[in-house]
Image 1 (spheres, helix red, strand yellow):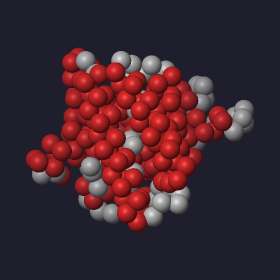
Image 2 (cartoon, one colour):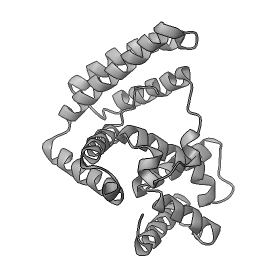
Image 3 (cartoon, helix red, strand yellow):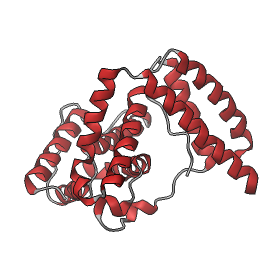
Image 4 (cartoon, helix red, strand yellow):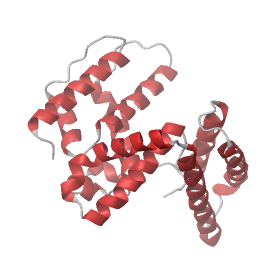
Amino acid sequence: MLVELDVSDYCRQIETYLCQKNDGHLIRVVGPSFEMVSRWASDGVPLKVALGGIDRYVERYYRKGPRRRPVRIDFCEADVLDVFDEWRRATGLTAAAASGEPTSHSARRGPSLPEHLERVLLRLTNARATNAVGGSVDGLIDQISSELDRARAAAGGIRGDARKALLDRLTAADATLLAAARLAVDGTQLEEIRREAEAELKGLADQMAPDALARAREHAIDHLVRERLRLPTITFS
């Protein structure tokens, strides 16, 4: 749980970021909107995760054509909670670990396996095209992309043992790519990522056992490495 001052600062930073996304048009985070954003803070949604949810909504809004009105923070809540769900899965945290009790958004339905593979392939292609990683990792991306492209064609009809085998292969490919990505990050960048991971988990540290916190820290580092190199999570759950 964040103290009141931290919650207020959290809301101000959300308001400032939304103003930037609205090309300087200020939409105040007050009343019910303030209560909603305060709940994000008290539920342990890291500021960076909340900003990522805002980005996701705004990017989708832009794709629909010219904007007709400024984006309100209320419109972004579903995307913020989706990104929070993804972050919790990536860091190994559960809804109970994040907030102390079950939350309604933890049960939100995710993408199907074919949809997941489509998204993973798109992000791998973008990472390759923008030279986000480079070096030997590019070759690994090409190899994994080819395998996933073949799997995508049959994913919708896979059942039973064949589906389990595919899911196991996705998990293995994810671990291989992540290990290579960690090696691609230099020492200075990795230290910055470690400090950022510590900051993300600061509000949850006193709610977790030391071994669980250590695992969450490593998962958070992995998650930030993915973000830094624009890599997707290949594992499907």
